[in-house]
Image (cartoon, rainbow, N blue to C red):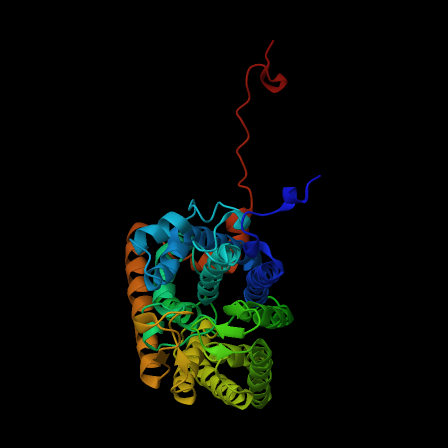
Length: 462
């Protein structure tokens, strides 16, 4: 058989370097599903036993709805920034022709695509999945803010709106080296703005609308009666998240064979140092969380500690030194502990996602101060407005990123809450919550016995 039978039209798209990168991005994308498992374990450990099934199913379906909604046109919108930077004619329309769910580049084999048209198209196809799954993860994170209280219908509608509209817009604004804000100097590495800050603020609005879980906070003459299913199960969920996090992080950048690794905002960095920083963030936040937990006799801080250290550093893993990462992790956990205490004193039922969002905000600002002046933005080989590393990280641009994210989260949450609240019930009843949503939603309803007919022996006469 001739050797040419096996030749590809454009072999550079599928050579060893390309396939190695493909596998790395596939691993990173799949780790997002592992992170979903972590959230499911945490939530099923921290809800009433009679609400475990409903909590799990809502989170899985919400994740899938958000993922599919993003796939329709979200990646096309995100890629628009690069089409614009590279001077593609009619860049917005062309980005959608190429990368919406039925786009030409999404349905073609990598070896059949000219690198002059779409270099690294295999990586882009995998990144389509990565960002879609991360959109689903954001929806699952929102659910953690209101688990046990929100009804399935409105939650799924929220996931469709967030995954299909809000998250893509926010991602396009704040993530990617030529995105409107990044190209000006806003820095983000693991999607702090579009995931943790957005989910925390959006979730807070939704939490305030739904109110706390029945029996969670004591009332005059009525002590607290809420009992979690299994705290050790939640601890296992934290471990799963810690395992998934470094794998997700390595997908947030560009691999240039023979040259190095660049963060998604085009910062010069290295995978080895990034991995060190991720582990340091776990250890630093975990140590402070453990100290607070033993001092207050509250194990929640021991569980939140490693997550707080990680989330606070998601903006800066690519630009910080290990000692700086440790500093951000310590401050992040102190912020989480303070906000955790505040929301509980005020009877606000979100002591997980919103405190972590506050840690992310503080971490973003610290990164702006510590990494002030670090080159960022633009794209390889370009000059001028989108020139390679033409922008600089500053505290002021980090503040802009936070302000834009908070504004989008608040406005979108209020709009969805108002519209959905006008046409459907958002919250399960207190009776169903205490009795158990599992039995209400998933136990088959008994059918009445049919009326006997004359053919039935029991009604025959004569």
